[in-house]
Image (tube, rainbow, N blue to C red; front, side, top):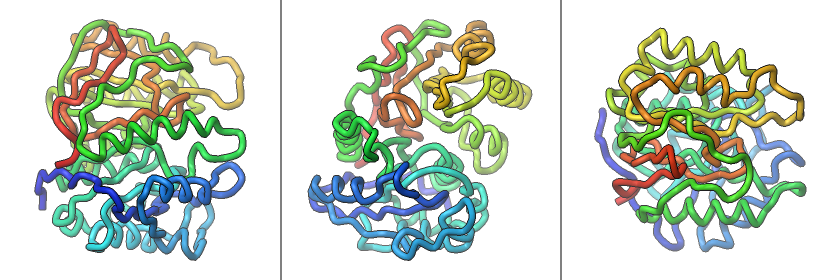
Length: 317
């Protein structure tokens, strides 16, 4: 089943399937129309999965598990689709892991972009199919009325660059929370991980791609310091944190503005400062101020002094 194939480079005029494997992008917090129009303005053709086309909706998710899995399988196996971008995260992707057509996915490698709840799908296809994916901008996120749309477009430009097979240096600081070193140094390895809750839930299972020397990426939003501590303790108890090449951590923002009893960086420094590998917090991605791409399954060099991530190989071929 495992093919270890990279997706093809995104070409001009390509067809992009927008799907909702987790929750539905409800308006006005999400603006799917604005995102679709922006993708079209870049010169790409857009097709919608059935969960979006027919607004199926099923409680907290965009559709029942079988329908959402069918949509993911369609997006990968339909020969007319060149790339897949999720509309949003939310909940429910764990329900799909035993329903996905991994042989079909491995035989049809394509760029897949999402973050947050899509973490479980992305790590599963990396583990079982050897297919890299990107945690990066999603179609309905960042285009609502209160969003900084120009900043959103800037991160989309970086995403497109990576999808085209270019190897830009990612990260640095362009506003938002200042990145902070937890343990200094430069590390090299393959990126794995994503949302800390979803990754912790699959860690050690057949859906977990982590191997010795990988760089673990973790992020989330609205997580209390004690919950972060529990997730990390769970990973540490499994031995997940023992033989890494580095740890890259997002911003862990709070939307409600309430102060944490302990700031996440303090909690994380207590865990990682004594490890042998480099680490830093506030990489501008996913739920944070920025949405810099995180190419899972790709070898990178992370610099915990300059807060950058350099691709050592192209994401796409």
